Length: 352
Image (tube, rainbow, N blue to C red; front, side, top):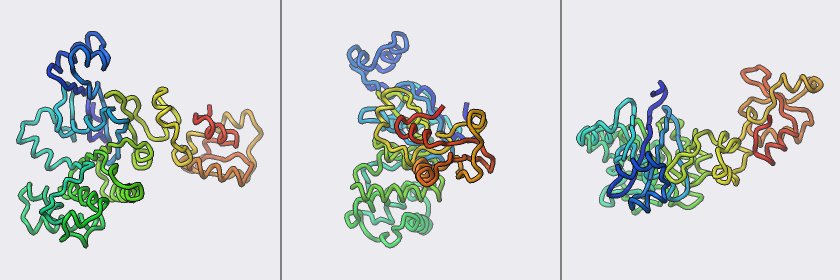
């Protein structure tokens, strides 16, 4: 069932590549075949395996995994660049699978913008003309589409480059043009398939910053595909981790780092620093339980909000030996001791 805040709902989506995908899927359901067994018996590849996801309005939802995990295959189902073998896809209440060819084309043009790793800019068109292309497809008048394209270029801070051609721009600038083109038609949903992965690390980080800034302004519902966990942690409101075509865990970066669903996820997130990911509410002990087992807090105990980062909590604990009082809307809700902080840093688990 679609929640009031949900923009995208996909249910039990399968994609099997091969000559007999339906038969392979039936065998999986009847006999529980593994991915390797499906390949051996049907010469078919399971790209996406029974994936169900819900994405909320205005959310940046990162889908990540190693090469071959199925993340890029999955994102191409949202606008039916790939047809699923089975499953249901809804965007803004529209059953995408029920759309005919013309309806689907119109739906893609009006509802969905897509940014690929390859910039795919038209070399014979100016930057301004490239950005205006989606509006040209909609038959928007030339004056109106150029005005709207210029406004979007200003938002991505490329307003002075509208008359240039793609080869005159750096890779990072070209990717910003690709993002501007996707935004020009004012879509409800952005699909971004590893848009920054081909860029140098410094340019990549700058574009991540730019995207975070734009997201706060435009509040577009975004599916962001990446193989880089640091990138997902940095920009995603929630993260889905995929393996062998399946989604193995969905949650905030903090959820996944503190409570990995299995050994695979634990290994996956082992290298992530918890200092900016974990917050006070995940580290604290309940206030009542602490006070019942310990002496009352001193009056000068430092106070923090539940969203305070682990990094700042550690700095507080360095300067003050007293336990830290955690508050929510002005009410005292929890306690954090130096032992709690050490345990969280060393073990990466929530204090019980």
